[in-house]
Image (cartoon, rainbow, N blue to C red; front, side):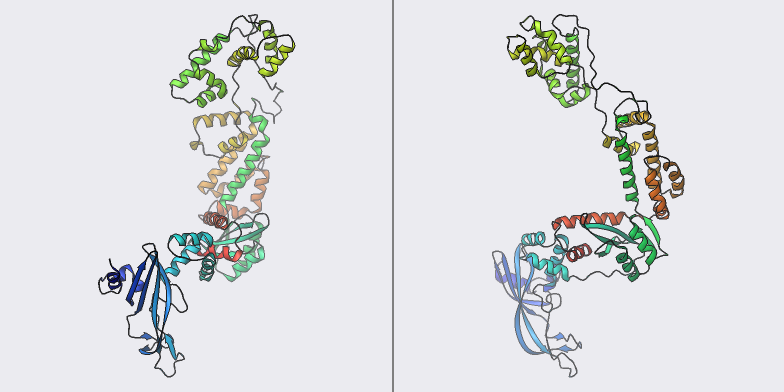
Length: 539
């Protein structure tokens, strides 16, 4: 398409679809266009013969002067667009009108003092609200709009704030501006899910002042902080307070995790240390086969090696990986690899036979059973005793002992793992996880009782069975791990009961709080409070 065809089409003489594709250019006539690399320029003038006076509304046609203004517009085909608008200065004929003259502005294309069209200004406002300064500037460059980060911040700060209006169910929660040092308060309309305000701190007086300035709160969803509870009682005494269910469960998880960590000895042995039934057991247990041969090697060496070789290759034939085979047999990955790569068990046993090492084999076996498994260290010891052979010979014989060494028992589950099993619904656990959890709980009555209390509280929480809270508090208060948690709930009993009974919860507040943290990270934690507040409200 030639430049003249583009000009004719944009001016509206060639295609009636102009108002659909470029509605902001519908009020003007395009007199000339120039399409260059990366830039499209258009010279336009108003279609109408006059304009309405902005003061009195009188239609004016008398022209007192003309001037040109340049507007940046949204990109077309990946190219920047500049529009030169021929503006007419009109005179108002009404004698009493305070506006003697005014500039005619085509509606939808130009606004007083603006250097961008409303279309581009709206796009930049959306970019600034979503990304902020530097990231927004980089995205705008991709969209063929040259704009600095400072301009985007100014555009964002100039956006009008949405009116809070009547908020029947506000949600209140705090978030950190600088962790451990400065905090702010986020207020959310729980019915619509939109943020209504951001306060510069989390003090009782600040929240109380906001609630007095916005009367009409019927239900307040809050976290369990005492400042928010006191502010609601003072400014909205008739409002129903609802504690945050997520924090209730989170606090219970913390107490359960600490209790499991304190009972670590119970979870890692066959008896319960907290009940006084645990006896001191040896840290290292080795079962020694009766040695019937003079060379100091176990009599059942061939049988053990052969059985392990068959077990490894059966797992390999079943499609298991080397790591899975090692875990199933209780062997190290390196030792499993020797069985994995060997062509037969006899290949692994071929080093047996008469050698100069024979007189020293009983000594080596005795030191091996004592826990000295460093082959280099053992070779130095027998060399000092008179052995004149090489270290590879020593290594080859001791490697046989490694092949037949007793498998290590599986490590007990970590406290964090046990806590996760305890806090997860049984239906979501695998059979192996359920079996391990049952074994741990069976060894320790206190953990067994704790798991029962946790499960019961989860049922109350998810089923909104607040009428069972009091009986749960009575039972859980007798457990040493949950006594403090139960006392904390009693201090905020009504709000917690409402949280476990009513439909309202602080889920939307927590979601917006998470998004707020994302906004802070986008600005590397360096945004001032007014800018961060504007982004929260604008997005």
